[in-house]
Length: 461
Image (cartoon, rainbow, N blue to C red):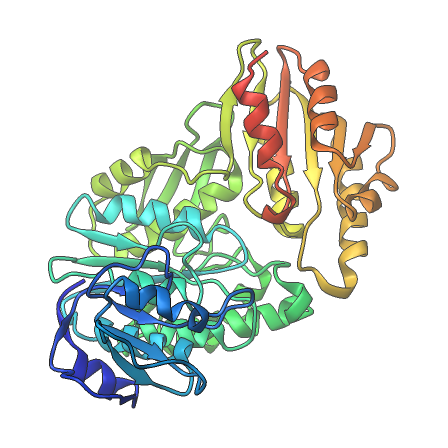
């Protein structure tokens, strides 16, 4: 983080400070009392489980420079060390305002924002891999894609940063608008519209309504890349006033792929770009990951990157953990961990990709609950069970979680086993693994199937 004057910060959040000299420089910001550093600006954030106001005494002991708070009933006088206290109405909103003010200082920065129901993280990592070949590139890490994570990522910008790639997530109406307003992107990608966070959004039309807020937040000369294989995104192309670049497998797209080879170690595909076909490869299985690559190609090409630069970046990018992460065991079995998250659309895509990428393998599915699906959650799990029936290469299905029972009731003519204990599932699974086995782990992150996966690959059979 570059130095920024505390007086400027106070002004941006309309804060009231208690005294002392606010004419000091800040170059560190924290929200966690356990990790906040000396001379930092600490925001006392009220979260779902913890309230930063409860830890103010701890951060005073670490000699932070200033504290942003909102509660009236806290101690603000300390001895012998006295930081500056700044009162605001809402500390989370204050964090967002400071992040926006800080981001606006970087006038030469090119910013890309990515949203969608699936594929955001993979697309972000692919694009960052391309951009950082040419100049310093910032992208948010892990799940730092919300109203806390995005501002904290913004504070990592420095004046030698040329590109910034932000993944924007949402679980409520208005979140994409807020995040886009902070990062003010020059380019945006919407990967798809699927069945994510339906506990709040209820249906895909509402998911679309939320995700397209990223378009309104683009800079005046901004460019939006849309996956027109997705019917929801295809339906809005002609309604957008800003420049649109379309991508997909549809030959009507500006950037589209054909001659796709999925059954090799690094899938290859030919892409129509700049009026001709160019061949690319990625180190990640699954046709849906080629769609992610197409969105990346669409933006990088419009930004002026050469085909060779784009190709090299895609070829060498490092796939995110728990997203089609594969390991070959000592006995020859292949195990894939795609259990970072799950919703009905991503569940079907991951399972379908197995037959495309690994023909002639005996497929074993280890599936868990899909969370945050709202009132229709039972029906969505039933539909996954019915979908599995259509796949002849799937021989065995292991299920874990309360909702996965609804899958079990609809899976026919397959060996189907339900467990409520991870160790028992692992014990039984190890007996099933043969040289020709292909195992997929897929569930929402909260089900923690990665615990089983990690134990399995650490004790290779």
